[in-house]
Image (cartoon, rainbow, N blue to C red; front, side, top):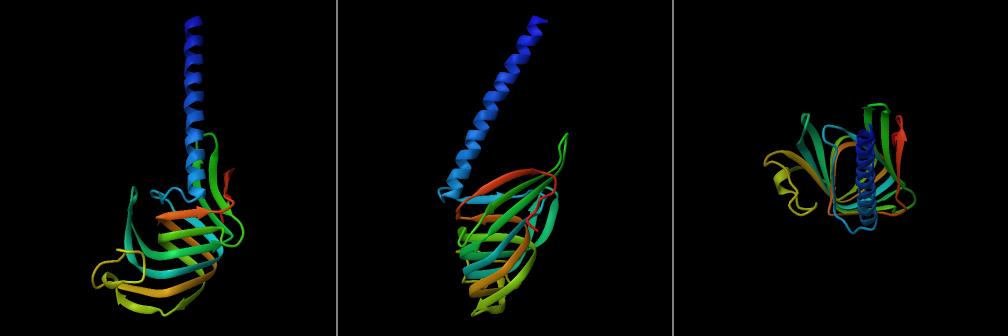
Length: 202
């Protein structure tokens, strides 16, 4: 009996150490991300996540069709690239459904205020987007392999449809995406919450 209790204590001690180290690593990553020290590349494997902003302003915009391949198969998406982007009143939410003993859990990231998020070489695989879009010097119907205004090297298959513009403004942005990538992503006033139940950005 004494041996069994001792083994239980050992396991809990190890768990506590590993858990504490995991929290420290996660905190360090979030701190670096929030201060632009870490390049960001996020993927929700087989799951969508939601992003909203009261306004997005971008320079060097391109968009074309693509196939997003993940653990649960292939999904059509609109790949959107912006060389430099800033967003106001940013929110991003990911729903983790049906966790054992817990149920649904929402991971929500918010950054309030003007220019609360700034990104360079932003690339998003979008499955749905709504809002008011204003473009400057837009070129619709260009060959996706000939794009020149977006992030360096970003393009689609030869002969496929694409569009590009010098600048884009999206008001009341609401988008559902499967993947977001950026060479730098700065979140001012980062607020991350883990919420029991469904609590999404829209």
